[in-house]
Image (cartoon, rainbow, N blue to C red; front, side, top):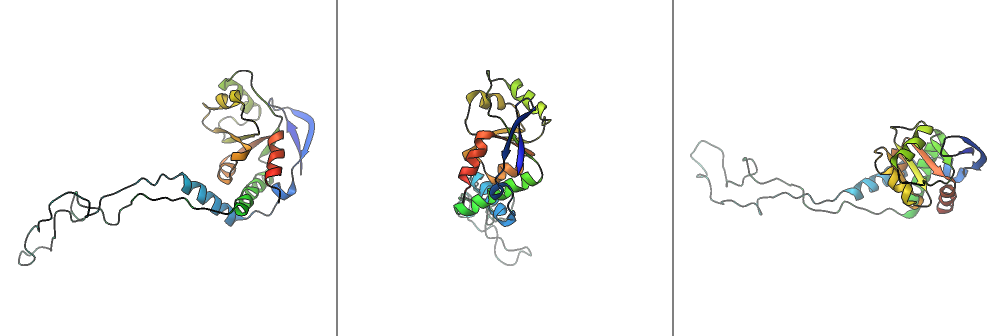
Amino acid sequence: MEVTVYDIKGAITPKKVQLDDAIFAIEPNDHAIYLDVKQYLANQRQGTHSSKEKSVLSGSTKKLHKQKGTGGSRKGGIKNPLFRGGARIFGPHPRDYSFKLNKKLKKLARKSALSYKAKDENITVIEDFNFETPKTKNFSEMLKNFQLTGKKTLVVVSKTEENVILASRNLKRLKVMHVTELNTYEILDATRLLITESSLREIENIHQN
């Protein structure tokens, strides 16, 4: 698939690049995408939630009243989970939600996500760029040139230029990501991908079979 290369002003350049069909035009594997996104979200969870059950809740263990003869239900103690301020039944405890996936499956998921974006024409290749000053205005003008103001945009770069990173920090719906950090969730979450020429070559090198 041949695509045009743009500059940061949104103008068409004479250059064209070829998107590798083995990465950007495969038959997407939805189950691989599901597993990779599930793992990404699971790994974001801290798992520090904790609740108190009867064994750790402070309070009297005295029986509230005799077992029979009161006309009421049986009550073992004030820590009964049915009482206000009582213990929690099968409450959450600290745990690790992360799990592992093999590299081939994760690579397949990323290629599937990139293929979906390419099919929907939501990938734009731009020239490598940097800003002279780390101003948010620079990035805002660039997004405006591509009519992406206010839209979820993922910019994939091969070099983490400090001015580019600093200029992007105050734009809420924009994310700048190094090509080695690219993942299935971020690809699918973005409305459009802006991929620099050098990072495109790195993507091809990383995802070669």
